[in-house]
Length: 335
Ligand code: NAD
Ligand code: DAU
Image (tube, rainbow, N blue to C red; front, side, top):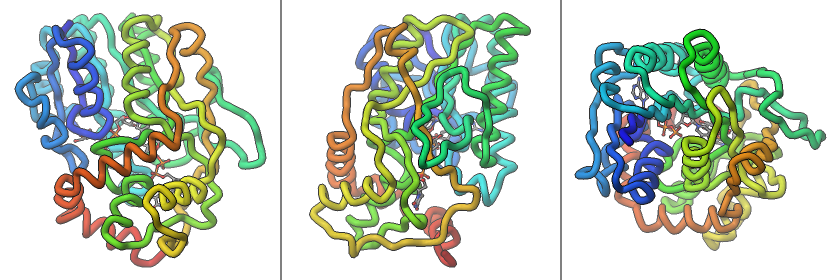
């Protein structure tokens, strides 16, 4: 099989590339990535001689067509992915996430790819009340509430439209919050771990009672593998963990305990505008139909993350410089 992996130099994409090569050593992998701020060739250093890397923009039809030539499968990770950045600069989210996905879909039709897998998020469904025990299913209505989730919802709709209108063999996965190695330290968990390792406090958006579901990135990769191998085209599958419900504050306290630190490392800061209160996915479809189950619980996932960031200081210290410092200053200055 020859796969085109878009966004393969980012967090989840690079984990997927390593996962796939280990499980499917006979396959050829082409990675197309613009190396935007979260894209980093060091994320692929271990496998650099086993893949073809193309630096290119998914919004550029000619670059995309060239990269896709001869590929039978596309796994589409490339995106602008951070909610806080989407609040400050929504335009680039619409360009990359909506227009970029459209360009890829058009090329996939032209190239006659056998499977286009689109990687999406639980955030497209909006938010659940903190007091509610509702869990979304693949049939739940879309109700995005941030520029990021609205742009991802737009991309999901385009993928579905290409299945209905042009018969492109697509699948979609909507996944919960991932954590793991090579995660850009602007997102809560790697930001918290690296701040504590630097002796800095963790900015927790008040009041810290918001709820997310946390999935170890390897489980996301195995979920996508199950969909590529056994999923039905035209279908959407949820990928999420089996953990009990934890608030952000509970997750941060677990992390602090693992790191041997106390609550003095918590800094309550002003909330994110339009902050989604809670996400909760019912992943029984992928489990029943494709036999997929998450392997890691939250405690083990957090321990693995702490161990990785402790062992890879050079990676994140380099990442937390330059543009990052500017971003951090602006993001947290007046909160
Ligand atoms: P990331 O920000 O770490 O990586 C995104 C990658 O896309 C980077 O390598 C970047 O350089 C690349 N990219 C950005 N714009 C591009 C363009 N125009 N052309 C080519 N490449 C471009 O993101 P991530 O956390 O790895 O997320 C990957 C995908 O998974 C995204 O589609 C995201 O919406 C989805 N997702 C993420 C999570 C999560 O918790 N991180 C959960 C569910 C779904
Ligand atoms: O749910 C899947 C989504 O998870 C993905 O689609 C996104 O790409 C990914 O970024 C993530 O979005 P979140 O907004 O949930 O992740 P983030 O790590 O930014 O925030 C997690 C929670 O922590 C959220 O409730 C906001 C809060 N938070 C975040 C930051 C950055 C804080 O309290 N303080 C912070 O400094």
